[in-house]
Each structure stands twice: as C-alpha cells, then as structure tokens.
Length: 340
Image 1 (cartoon, rainbow, N blue to C red):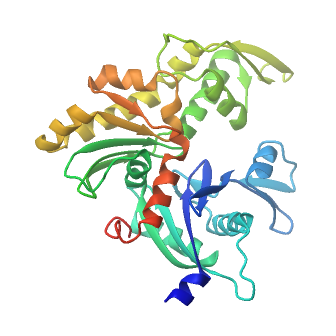
Image 2: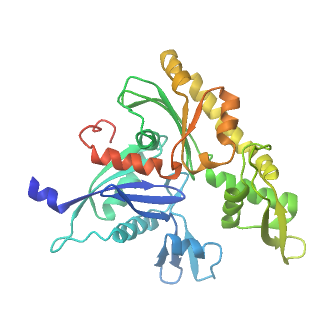
Image 3: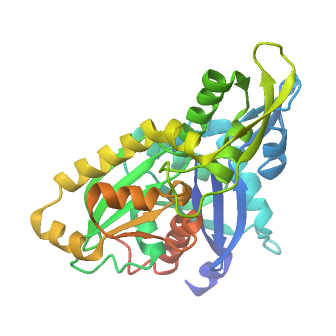
C-alpha cells in the first residue's frame, strides 16, 4: 500500500463557473478564471485561465472564448476536460518514470442532477484522474470556514458563486435541507450590462460589468463607507462612438436589487423548511456567507435586516470552498460519508 501511495498524488479542485482553484499539498497552486480560448479553424486550444480571460470579448473571428461551466455545471464537455488537464499540468506534478495516479476531490453544487454529476466525473477521468470523489459546495464551504460539521449543531451556509447560490443547513456531517438557485455573480454582471444599456445608452462587455461590480457594486443604496464613483467606458448606442460615463454605488445597488431579492427569498424559504431544533441553533450561531458574491458591499447588512440573524462573512470567502475541499481530501477517513 505504501508503495502505491507513493505514486498517488491527491488534489482538491473547486471547479467554479467563474474561477477554478486547485489545492495540492495544502497549498493553493492554481487559481485561474474558468475560461478557454479556441482557434475556430483547427479547434485547437490556444489559452486557458488568465491569458484566455484577457482575450475574452476582444477576439477576432478565428478565435472564440468559451466558459466551459454555466450555472455551476459543465456546459461544454470537451473544453472542460481540456481546461482541467491543462490546469493540472500547471501544478508541475511529474513522476520520474511513471506518471502519478491522481486522486481528486471535486466540489459540485448541491442542486446538481445525476447526469451533471456524471459529466464532472467523466471530465476529471478523461483529464487523467484514477479516482474521483465529489463533495457538495455548501459542505465544503462549511469545512473551509472552520465549522465542525460533525457536531449535532445546526449551521446555515450561503455560498454565492459565479453560477449558483447554494443555501444549506448542515448538522451531523449531512445536509438537512438545501436550496440551490441559479442566481449569482454572473446574473449580477448581466443586470449591470442591462442597466447600462437601458439607463445610459452605453454598450459594455462582460469584463467591464464585472469590473463595475467589484469597484462600485453594492446591495444597499446607503452605505457607511461608500466607494468612489467609477468611470465606465463603452460604446454609445446612438452614435456608435466610444464614450465614458460616471456611475455610483447607489445606481448599481438599484440595478442589482431584483437578483438580490431572489437570493433573499430563497434564504427565507430555506429557513422555513428548517426543523425547529436546528432553527434554535441557527438563531444562536447565525448565518455564514462564502463565495465571491458575499463580498458585495452591504450584502451581509441587508441579509441581517431581512432575517434579524447574526451574519458572518468567511475569511477569504473566494477560497472558502476550495479550502474545505482540501481539508476533506486530507481527512479522507474522517469525512468518508461526506464525499460521494
């Protein structure tokens, strides 16, 4: 067994709609956008991750950029497989004579279907994995935040990623109830693009919308520490000439309101479905937020106003799920019943 374990390398992957994070030897070794650039004429992949991200929205007709994952699940099987393979190469694992066998733990949305689950496993196997286990994102987020998920105490986790928002109540190493809605970071970007078109007659791309969300995105129209106004550049829809407009966080808070409301509604539904004893625990422990969407200014405050519960934002929320996946991989025997 010892000899075989020498040839086995263990890696944890947070395969996200927006970013893919790989943990090897307890360290984050890859943190790249989940995007691939392909040459149309030959179907050859010319870039992945940050390099492909720089091309996104700026390509000519012979190059297309693809995001292999949509709403937390694989939308383009071939591109996903290639992306996983290339990102594994970035780690620099090489066997001296034999290529090492890869054991992977990959986290997946809790609302995923069996077919979508199979697609994730197949992609990983095609990319060279000998053994693939899956763990649900809210469970991985809870472990990553530092919650003892094996205790008989109810904890509520909200993980807002790029494609899905996962809301789950966890106790005794299992998910008691969960709500997975396909409203998350990508929808915030789409709302901003839409708002710029309708309100300012300016066409902007996905990357610019993401930038606006980071610079002046907010969940509340009034903040204690407001960000500075932000200059947006795009194409004027009337004249076709590039132009600049200035936006502030209050406008963005109004344009994101509809999507945030959907998340709030899902949180309230999840709380309604929670057994009374666990509700009592959640009242004491509060709600934990993870994922990039939880970094939206004022989101925790808005959720607190709605639920009247204490809201805790995870330390480094972007990597909470990846960290939890890494811990689950390291303590494989302890968490066997969490991992599919």
